[in-house]
Length: 220
Image (cartoon, rainbow, N blue to C red; front, side, top):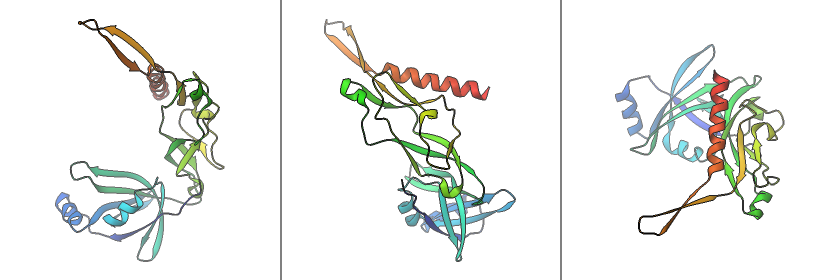
C-alpha cells in the first residue's frame, strides 16, 4: 500500500490541569504533548476538526507543523472520551528519520479469499495488529496479508507474513494471525424436547488461547 504523508497543524499551549484542558476542548481544540528522548516535552493543541479528518486513516508517522517548522512524530497514544465520543488527549513522540522505530501496525486479509472457503471453511483473524521495526519512511500504515493459500485447518503465523521492504516483525513469530476453521454445532435437547443449536468456532478459541500462552511464556 502506497504511503501517504499525513500532515497535522499544531500550536503551542500553556500546560494546565484538568480545568484548563476542559476549557481548551470547549474551544474546539485537543490538548496534546510532543516528547522525545533527550528533548523537552512540548505542550501543544490540535484542531479537533482537523484531527477528525486525519483520524479516519491508519496512522503511525505524522508530520506536525508548528509556526512553519516540521517535526516528524510517531503517534503513541490517543485518549478517547467514551461519554462525549471525542478525543480528549494525544501523545506524539518526536523521531529521528535516520533511526529505526517500532510501532503497532494493523494487518488486513488480502482481497483473495482462502481456498478453504470453497470447502466450507471460514477465515478467522486472531491478530489485528503486529509490532514491527523500520525506518520512519518505511513504516507501513497497514500490512496486507495474502491468505489465499490457506485451506481448512491451516494457520498463518506472524513469521509467515511477507513484510514490506525494510520492515521487520517484532511480534512473536509463532503467534497465529489467521486461520481457516469450520464451525461446529452442538445440539442439546431442551426440557420440552426441542433441539437447541449453539454454533461455536472452537478452533478459533483454541488458537487465541495458544497465542496468549506463548505471549505469557515470552514475558516470563
